[in-house]
Image (cartoon, rainbow, N blue to C red; front, top):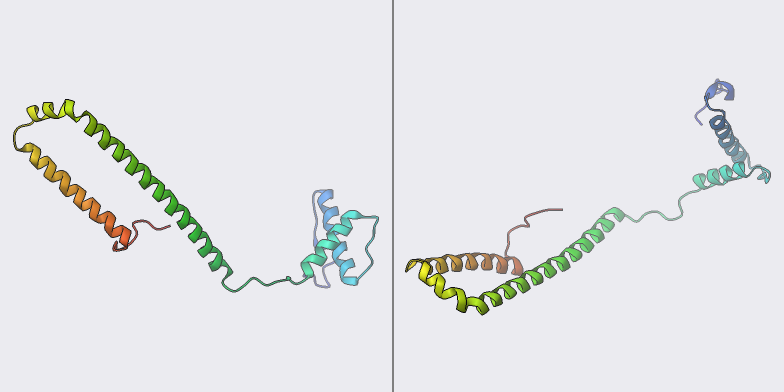
Length: 160
């Protein structure tokens, strides 16, 4: 549409495909007629469509987008994702706790069979060191979980 008087329709654009050339000419004609305010021709529906499109593109936007719209949408999406992650994390912890309880129940119910055999196989004194190491692991991981639950954890380990 940036034509100078030297450019005429004959030398402005050339197309290899005649269908594309016809569409181009139809679009140009729709713009010319729309600018001139000519009445719409009912006989050519493609021209009418291009005129409606030209009219829509020339009209100003009805409502401007609010300031900070992208930030608001991003915050909303992050909150939704965080909520979904929170539920999923809770369900995973619940499943893990159920598996631990089920495992502990199985160990406790069958301990009458294997505990005496284990005590006979393990040298005396080594069993107390195993219990001590298990207690240390439990205390460390338990404290990290409590610190994370009450918000004393320094920073998240991953970022989105």
